[in-house]
Image (cartoon, rainbow, N blue to C red; front, side, top):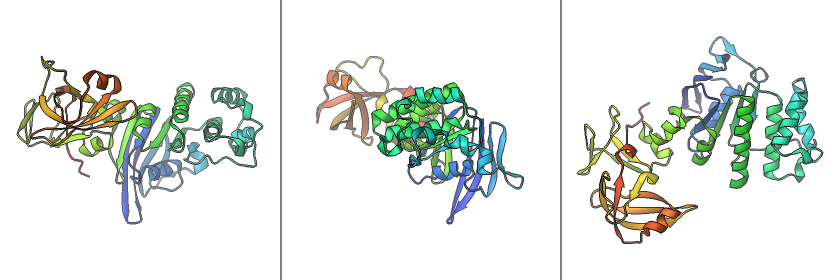
Length: 351
């Protein structure tokens, strides 16, 4: 369990973080410069908050006026973006460095398990300068796990790695965390990494937590338009009128299924916009006549921009196999369907 309710003022800017989670894998997600690293550095104890409380698995790390555990007492396994291996030490010596410094007992079984799982056994006598970026990060991960921390903090540790290597490392870390059961906080501005790493997600923008909760809820049904913009809701419209199960936008009435008090925006993810085959409009919801304006080939999918006579331009994300079947072309008139379950009401965040 992690509970954070703190504030801090840096260089005339105020930061306020307030969230709680009982999950083992928490992603702190937001754009560059949002204040993500400031948060984890205060959890790690690199500098104190001005006010508030930090609790990790019932251990109070910080409570204003009462407790401020030293960095070494918090036992945080911190992995920054840089690999931070000691160049004069072998791979094995790097892995065991934390154990030596902390005068901890050497766990031979854990060492063997980590070396095997991370596939670095053949490099134990090598020095870091001959390792690839992915291999160096595996060594850094093994070193962090060897000290058996109370919590891990991964501060964008995969940002410099190629996608296949990154995805393999994410699989390995998820496996290790599930086996060893140590809570972890992942800092990232990559939405794909957030999906792969997190159970709960904390959304940060401009030094504040906008919302937090299960990743499925946050990514698929955000409460705030600011969150929606960060998690790739590319279709967001301001609502002119809201009635029961009906939203009006620029004169277009759309059926909706969810309810949100004080909602002023409506959004839908690009992958949830359906292009209909000719004649395939039976029992489909919110059918609109649109024209294909642009088609962009992406990795594994197509991004299609369509125009409507009243609504703003609509972005559609279409998998390659669906694109081949539907064969949309520039200037073609098509029908699309916006399922009411996929239309999400939101409001603006007010601090």
